[in-house]
Length: 284
Image (cartoon, rainbow, N blue to C red):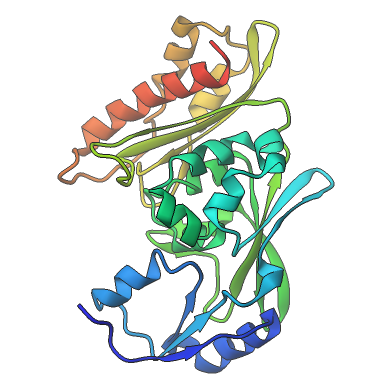
């Protein structure tokens, strides 16, 4: 299907992009890598009058180290994130998630910020961002503001980004030396995960000192598995201890039921994948 006709704008600065978005309001859509927006336009699920392409704004790309955080520009491609040594050293959970995100073509065209702003509850990046305590820098007519991951995802395909605002960068606290593993279950390659688990742990001796775990496709937004995190603190790095903690992975979740599996099946997957992810992250 062919999209309806729209005007195309390609600003070269963030200020121009914000001004264009403010001018056109609800009639405009932001184009980042296009891997989420273009299918929506082709199916005519959305028909904006104006599309604002951020691809010519160099300040929105790149990865840098800033104190205790790694900062990823919203327009940085998944491929660039996946091969960046800073991300691999200090936020390895992101590296692992990006490595198996869709296929190579989408990783080269899709953008880190675009995928997060799309806020698909089955997306590969929401869980790792939530688990790592990412902060989202959002810029609008009034300047920039920072939103924690716990407040960024507000509902199904909804975020804290205002109608006249643009996600400009994502700040990820360093988790240097933490083990990490991103586990997801799919029926076919490159599919959205039926369930995914993002786990990062800090091991001290033979026990788990800290654990951060987030689930994807277990509700309308990514979810922290808080009860599992609490149960893992001080737990031995053994299949028995980790399995006992992972048994709580589905607590408080409301997963969807669809052709890929019903809610009970997804809750079972969450427990199994959490156990596997934590053990792998802990090096067991």
